Amino acid sequence: MSNLRAFLERFFCVVLAGLLAFAPAAASAQGYRPNEEDRPREFPNIYWFTEKNRRDTPLQNFRFEVKVTGGERLIWAGELYLSEYEGARIETDLRDINPACSYEERRKVSRNSALVLTLSSVDYGEAYGFWLRTYWEHRLPQCGELRSAIAFINVPVQLAEGESETVEGDSGLRVHLKRLPWPQ
Image (cartoon, rainbow, N blue to C red; front, side):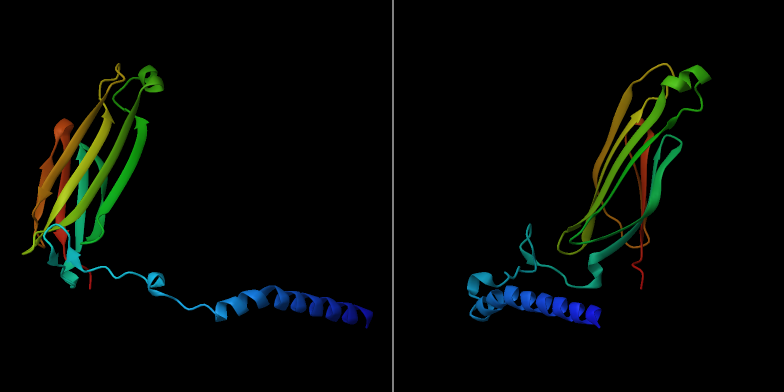
């Protein structure tokens, strides 16, 4: 019985303290009236470069199958989803040994490969285009050297649904894009 009484006393004190703590905040909130500056701003649905209205349709959504190779090696492959408002970006950082090197060389030389690929849409008014940016830093294949090379691709790409294109850069960098239909 005494445990029940102690519990009820503690419970009452906790409830009373909570009511007293929130009473001033509730009283001040009742007197608050939002003004014009407190309302969220509305952004116009226009394309800033052409100052034309944006299309508010499923045509703004894009799906790509992407395959990136460096020389004969597959660096990354997968699907990217993007829209008029959001592009897609993939970053990889790979480190492994070069199997062509001898045992002693493998202990001190690795194959480092860093890839950054960005694909974004561009509204040309009549249709959408895409901009592909790819940066690939990789170790040169010679076993006795510790030098790296950098390859860039920065090009516009025009692809209708179902079409594909392969873009090539330096050092054997290749990006194969295929535009797929948006999933229903």
